[in-house]
Image (cartoon, rainbow, N blue to C red):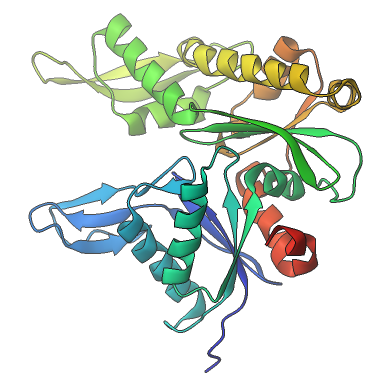
Amino acid sequence: MRILGHDLALDLGAASTQIYVRKRGIVLNEPSLVLRDESTGEVVGFGAEEPRTADSVAVCPVSRGVPTDHELTRRLIRHFLRKVHGHSFSRPRMVIALPADSTGLARDVLRDMAFEAEARQVYLVQHGLAAALGAGVQLGDPTAHMIVDLGCDTTRIAVVSRGSVVRAVTVHAGGRDVNRALIAQVRHEHHQVIGEHDAEQAKQRVGTAWKPSRARATVRGTDPETKGESVLLVTAEEVYRATRALVNTVVRAATRLIEECSPETAEDVTDHGATLTGGGALMHGLPDRLHAELGIPVQRAERPVEAVALGLGRCVDDFSLIRKDR
């Protein structure tokens, strides 16, 4: 048995955790969930595991890229590492994304958590740089690139040039906010309550951020007074309206970021545009909508959901890329 495991990259997200193993690629992509027995508080599962008790509740110990529950996050990561390596003594070198708005305390928490999860060495790479590398930006490229990473609870916008983040801003809104806006609309207009899972399904089926079609999605609603169930049809137009607040927030943040850049950097971004990464980038029509609002080219990364993990993976495959940022 090999005691020292393969070096790996960890993309710790509020929705999912992805692990990239050196020279092998992404080998794990599971929900960032810990399952607990509601009556006893005992941990009964992790990630995509089926609940082992009828009273299991899912807890997400991560928010906006950093642990909100240190102990549960540590246990979640150790579970994933053992799943990847097959034993509990892997001791890998680990590369982790560091959100741009992280405090010194958050940086220390990420490092401590990784060491407690049996990492032998920890490297932190700025989230915006990881997303850019995963989207195909070359490390030494002098041209400035804007990366818009849309997560479930956070949107991170960064301008990257010559292998470093020039400017960055974090917006505390993401795909989950679109779901919540849709839930509120359905309650107001249909007088029915739908769950976040149904809202997410409707968004995936007919969701668009640009020129909505006549498409409709079937969801199950509940009358808030009688508790009776019924079948509802959610239209693409309704989902489009639910995206409005998030899109407007992203546009304002991106515009402000460009204005804060030097004239040369701003010109690069205006000419070359922005690349969308993250799960929110999958929404139909979002590049067109942002292009219309920002007035710059906007494209979706080839593998948007995996971009951060792939970018961190490039660092794992070649540690010389991050020696200066240890």
